[in-house]
Image (tube, rainbow, N blue to C red; front, side, top):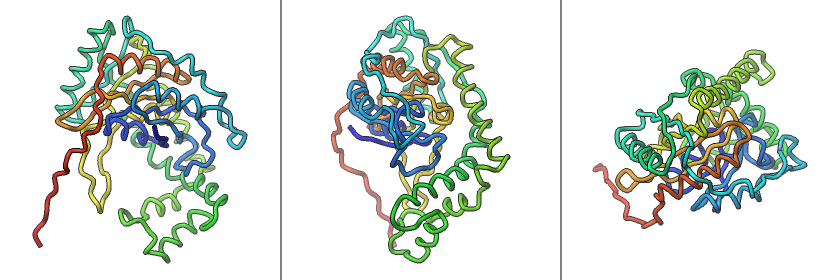
Length: 315
């Protein structure tokens, strides 16, 4: 098992791309103490593991109240997350055709297997996604400035974001070789989190993200919304880094609701996950459903360490 931290996708997407299970807990169930922050409004640690059972065991250890984090909740009741049956469960399939025809075909096969196990699968499109995408990034810039200042103040070295930027300028050999610090500079110039415009932005984000999940589930009588977690793994550019955008993690991430990536199958040799999402404070229900989905799909393969395909540029 391993522990990841997610603001929007950073647990579930790696889980999907590596063919393992990844659980993004509901916000507040795992302490944020010690986590290098992007935003306290969305950040949470969570487990990645070979299967849902190992994920539940790890989560039961991670969760609970931390005196250093006033927002953390009581411990997670592991006994509530027992594997259940898919019979009679209603699952909303959010296809996300932008992830490609191969992924969409895999979702069609996945839906057929869930129906064969007794689940009712209906197609859905959660609302408000364009507005969430418009608001999330600028809100995170302001919140990163606030939260990284608080984090750095508790550590040795640069004491705030401005100091970190200056350190990078004066110590170029110690900077990451993969990217500059443009995002740091954007965050430094972003409005304060006390600015009324920022407060209105975060309030709208919270409202619309919760409604995107809750309204979709209520309109179709769903137990969960499920979408592809990821496209097949893409090539990472050494200069630009990752440049793919995957919207399936956003509603749960912004709303603070739980989500769970379970292996769904492969496109060629590359894994793709299925991402069930449930409403707020429904981690136990989500993990129970995820265990049943995992058992039915049985899509995990042990790593085979295939040789990489390399290319060379003449010059």
